Amino acid sequence: MPIPFALGPCAGLTVRAELREEQKADLGRKFSKRDRRPVDPPPVVRLRMYQVFNAETDHPTEQEILADITGVIIIGRRHSIRR
Image (cartoon, rainbow, N blue to C red; front, side, top):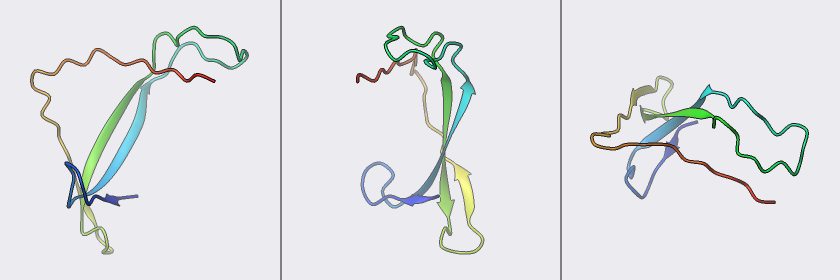
């Protein structure tokens, strides 16, 4: 579902995001509630964003928003949920 932005770096744009899991984690937390080991290896996801034109019509079109990541090195992030 496209989202129109009023503020921020996407102000004035209508954007649709797509999140896809590229690589699943090998270990899960299916059977134990107290297992605090990190998921190893962590899952790998891909986020793609599209600018939507004519979203309110019957024939919307999309163009992928490409980020300029020159000089950016992304090693990874680990997030945990504490209960």
